[in-house]
Image 1 (cartoon, helix red, strand yellow):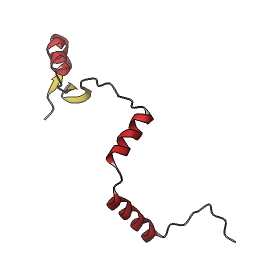
Image 2 (image 1 turned 30 degrees about the vertical axis):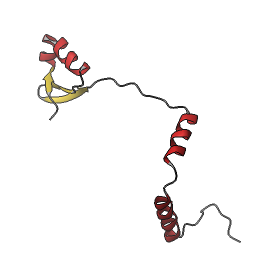
Image 3 (image 1 turned 180 degrees about the horizontal axis):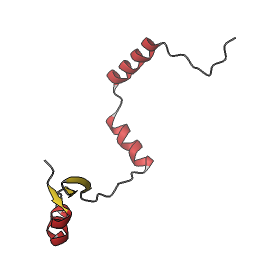
Image 4 (image 1 turned 90 degrees about the horizontal axis):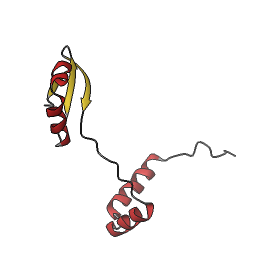
Length: 87
């Protein structure tokens, strides 16, 4: 369960909670027992260039079983293109 901390407790000693958050903890801040916010560690997003992603996907190789399942599902649905002109 996520630990909670009241606004009053946070006001008295924010340093302890922030140190724990820095170490990976998450806290729910409450106001009169009602959860109002969540404080969690900040994580930077890592953007991967398309060329790097392409190399990773090529290294993984094709998943023939998954491709067959996708083809089977497509055939079973009898998909119709709603934008195709009927003649």
